Each structure stands twice: as structure tokens, then as C-alpha cells.
Length: 282
Image 1: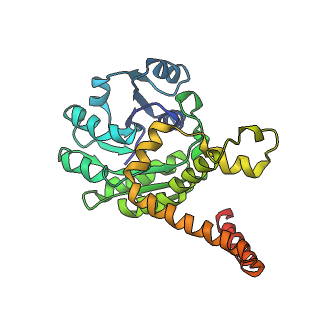
Image 2: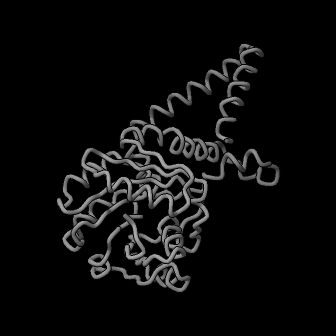
Image 3: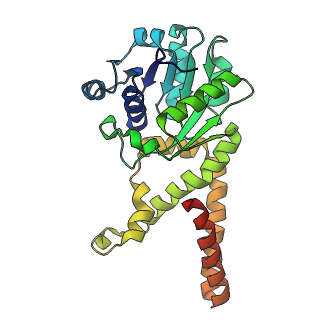
């Protein structure tokens, strides 16, 4: 249960970590932060997002009731290994990572028995990074996914549901880590792969003065953090490769439809896409 006495520690003050800090501090919660960049900590403190910040923060770790690991995927397990001896008994840990398999089980396998790690994924963001772009409104009407395992307690799941509600998420779902990664491989990673591939198709920079909304909408997420997304793609590569193969098959079907002058099938594809897209406008 989250109360006004709950102390939050955010490890990693990027866009999501900073937006979490902004949302929680606005509601009167005590929020501390650890980040390798002193400039990020100074900015967050000046903006009233956090009470205290440190680049190491052993004391902050000892005081935290809820620790949010808003760091790159490959940094989660090493951070816990290095710092879990400092964490107070019964503290709850969570993350913001876009891939769960290979993280959740590994963390839970090495975690102290008096601590609990429950993974979660805020389906929100921007095409920019850094605490200076923190914006708590990105969570409003967004989706939030909790990915518990059999090692998690009901109380931890309920705590994360309460946490998501506090931040303004409109839809809160519970998936196991494998279901999450299958879903995210399609709705997030494949879409980023398509946007990146579209921008890398020939040299299209000379078209900047001629594009309309359709091109800008399709390629907005091609402004990508190459370090973060390389980790995410490789961690989920088997699922993502299958999604890419399915997409290539569909593109080839559309190409063959044109080559065969099959107007009826082309219209059917358009109608099917339109009907499916309507479901996302609810």
C-alpha cells in the first residue's frame, strides 16, 4: 500500500524516470533520485521533481520504500547485485524496461528473500530523451503493463496497480513476461523497425520540403536512442525477427496484388486495415 509516507527512489533520471519524479512530487510524495549525471540531478532538484539526488546515493537507497529502476535494460541486474545489500527490508523494486524475459527471472533469482521485484512497463514516451523533457502528462490516458511471475505477491501487484493509477494511466493490464514480450515485439519494436527502415530507404533527406503528415507520422519514432533500442532489439530478437518476417510477407502480398492487377484484393486490404484501425480510436 502506498501512503504519503512512502519514499520513492528513482534510479536513472531520463525521460521516464524524470516524468515519474514529476508526477509523484506533484502529489506530495517524497522522491529521491540517483543518476550518473550531476547536471540531471541539479535540474530535477531545481524543478522541484526530487528532494535529494546523488550520483552514488547509498543513504538514499537505505531509506527508500519503493525503488524504480529507470535505467537501460542491461544495467538492471548489475545495479541490483551491487546495491541490494543496502536496501531496507520489505522494499519493493520495479523497472520501466520494454523487455521482460531475461530480466525478471534473473533478478528474482538473485534477489534477497526479504525484497520483492515486480516488473512493469509504462507504455508512454516521446521521441526525445533526458530529464529536461520530463512531462507527467505523457502518462495520462496511456497504458501500463504489470508483468508478475509466480514469485510475486498479491500485495505487490496491487501496489503497482495503485502506483499506475496515481500517475494517471488509463488502462492497467497484467501479462506474464513472455506474453508481454510477444505483444511488445509487434506493437512497439516492429513499428520502430519499420520507421527506422523507412528513413534508411535510399537517401530521402532531399524530400524534407515535400513531405506531408503521413510521412512525418510514420517516421516520428525513427528519432531513436540507439543504445537503448539496440539492447531492446537484441534482448527480444527471436520474437522481433518473427514479426519482421510476418510483416515482410504482408508487404510482399500487397506487392503481388499490384503486380496481378487485383483491384478487388487491394480494396479488401484497405477495408480490413481501416476496420482494424478503428478499434484503436476508442
